[in-house]
Length: 242
Image (cartoon, helix red, strand yellow):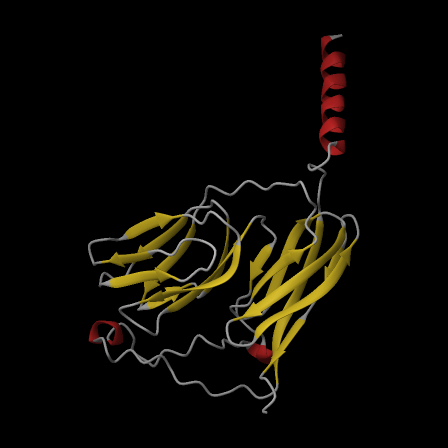
């Protein structure tokens, strides 16, 4: 009798959770590939000669990070996120695992990333030389953190959503990174294969945005069914000459 009662309570509890507004099970997915069309411009490598400590960390020229292409002109460093359509009233707790930005080889790694509001943002100094981490948001407070060789890491958080802003190093002007801050986990950043996946969505219609630091933002409307999967690709190109 006790076991039967426990099963009844468990079933009732599951029914309440699954039926309660704001906590319905969400299992829909949007994925795609971002590509560059046309002839890619030839970009100069990063100029690190001004700081010999940085230059000697590399045995070959370091390619520009402004346009990172893979096989077939797939694009890396594209931040993709759900910009409209997330159900009102749903909340998403920030992960306790930090998002990490490293200063390595006098570059910010990764170059582009997403983070949730309130999630720890850990900044490392693996180079062991003087860096300066200067954020340039318009909504969140700016920070300007000197990181001498003895300071190996520092941690901060962002209190408000804000896609997308730059982080720079005031010591090494070629060092830049970009961060998007979101209230939900529905974002992705492409690697050189250009692929992204956003999962865990409720059924519905969403606006998906894809951002590149030089080529701007594109949007697309996508409708997903319950436990469905949709493909939404993006194509970027150089602006037409005026």
